[in-house]
Length: 121
Image (cartoon, rainbow, N blue to C red; front, side):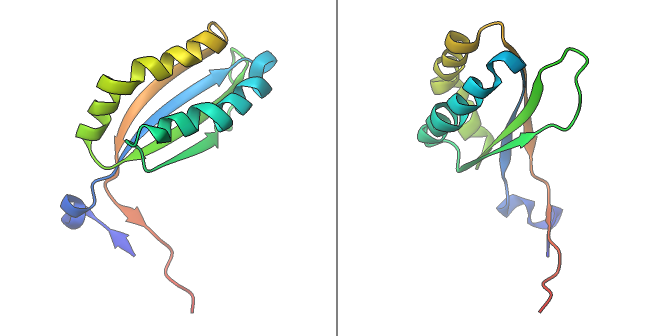
């Protein structure tokens, strides 16, 4: 099944992708904070329908462990509302606990199509 450009008007999905490299010395504390506090707080804004955390399988020259966290939302307007209403507070929490222990960059993505393996019945 393919959802392609012809149906994109009805299938707008945006992903707010945050890639983070965290120092190994605080990794376990950070991981617990992400899974128990930060990701639930992001979802509690009501602006994201789901979140996905992925381990980036690359060895960084600078060390640390890299993750990509993807937050799914329905529109660019909703994402802009997150920036205006919630981003500073939630980013501030990360800085409060882990300042100087991570680097992050953010990317906005728009889903253009989804492809699925045909059903094997």
